[in-house]
Length: 422
RNA sequence: GGAGGGGUGGCAGAGCGGUUGAAUGCACCGGUCUUGAAAACCGGCAAGGGUUUACGCCCUUCGGGGGUUCGAAUCCCUCCCCCUCCGCCA
Image 1 (cartoon, rainbow, N blue to C red):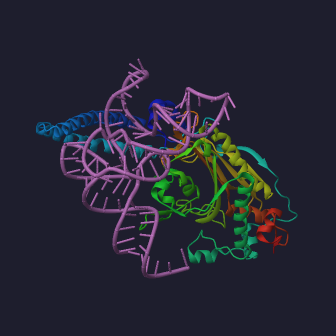
Image 2: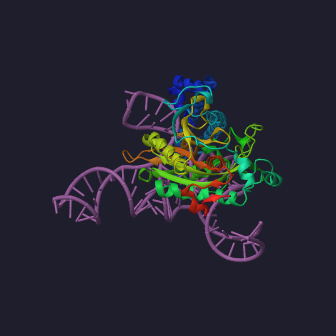
Image 3: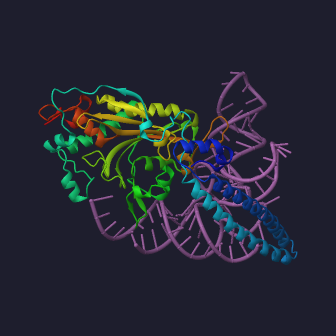
């Protein structure tokens, strides 16, 4: 959420940034509403002040045995008026909040301006495309031959997009998750958490899934709970409505979770195999940091996510999203894309974002500054470190042998207990 | 699911219709003392909003919402959460 004061004070700048995102909002309506709200609030405050003074006087009169019936009669009218004004003010406030909660974050000044993903900027790449002495197969062909997963039976149980991992596939999935969690803990000191996989409306609103993206989530009406689309939701909400001591920052959390996405409106896109799923596994990294440090933390977060791909020896590139491709809550974002030689495609396995105070404001996540003891919003960041389905695709396709067997990268071998899958 | 208890400032914990935005303790900040530190003593210390060039002033907030009242942390209704016991269950 961006503060209304920022809209009042930096209207031009904010409008431009929305334009760069390809969005437009009726700022006039916001400003008029805001003015109306403040006018009402001022009137209300004056009346309440009057009431407070009168009530105290009545109390005093009562105690000293004086008659206060006339004052009480008068205050009855004032109270009635206050109630009416309160209703109006609350209604205006709700209207205003409803608009603010639907406004996207403002891109950081360093973000390249562009309309869509074609304007994203490749920042760097790592490794090289593997050379095969044969035509590389797709992960579907390889995995099916090796009995690693079964999409037909997964669909029988739940529908398409719900993969059933089997045998070495199931074990490899578990190995990857364990490997990534261990790596982030031992290399970078992340605190591992195992969060709930469902979350309530407040939690979903903090991170920005609600109110705009309700359609994208699975939800249990009877319990008013959503299945989480990412561990970002529960983990960011760990510190909702809290004031953290500055000395506790930065806080680094890692979490495995299953992720559930309805992918409404994307049918027919990437329907093959593991490229787009309704349920998948992911290790998520979440940081709570001071405002001054958040952009340095974004760089290190990205590097930490990258290190997973490096250790596994996978060719990848880092792409900086342009303004038009930036998500609702993000102020700046790097995507990690891994090379899948069978698909001959770059696959997004991670998005590393700085949300600045956008989520912190929604979730009221604050810290007490050492320098002046004042309270301020933290900055939150998160990135996948990384998502398994496309990682699995890249792994199978990169490490395939001519006979369809798969070599397991050395760091992963102890986790899987195998040097190769055949 | 049934019975009972409870949710108050950064934390602990009083208050149970009228200077209570809230005692007290801890934590924190400043000062005195000390060679330095600790202890002791003195002082300060909630957040949000509005208004003001500023000092300041005003309003709101004691789990959420609603009600009673001139006036609610305090009374009533309702919802949520936590704890204890019983039942059920991985």
